[in-house]
Image (cartoon, rainbow, N blue to C red; front, side, top):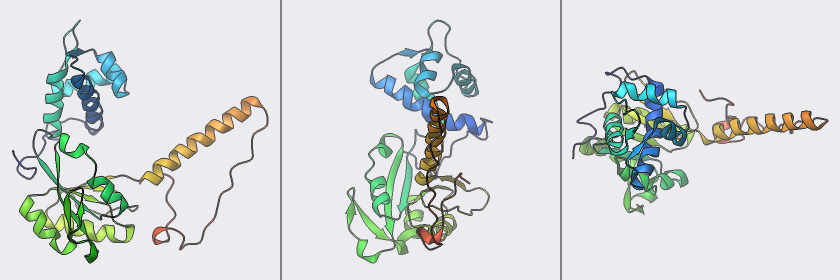
Length: 254
């Protein structure tokens, strides 16, 4: 099986919009569920509903792939699974390193969905010497001193950062210098990377804050329709050293 370093997806060179690329995994997840139920074909309306988008947007997205379906029949499920998997680069093996094996890093290492989606955890890396050699999800943790050699020997092009915020940029710099060109960042900080390196940021606290905003708005609307508005929730102020690196999480993602 080819490694991730040898071949890279051609979505950008083919002119597929980033918004469409972001929706392809949603379609693939819905199609995979249909395939597991041995459903042979699906209409654009059914697939759009399963993916949480409107059918017109789905048909537009699929037109970039050259897939238009058959009137009265719909889309061939197995063919679309293959087509989208190929477009996303999931028909090949992508070795991944996870740096930072605390609670979050260990949970990611134990996630069983990587292998079935074209990703192989090549190594687990941590700066704590006492972690070296300890198995997590059946993989022995290695010290950060081995990072560059692991990336080189395994042809790694995707790195996952699950370290504390204060260590994330240094880890990022080392990953990039060693040849990693795509990073999934779970650390609560914004990373600076050179052109040609893609970063996807996952910040659970930000997502919760956005949900809190919507909950507060819904509560206000209910209060307005039912009578007097409730008092606003108390806002706790905290000193600069409260929380990781003394930072108060931003309300909106960067």
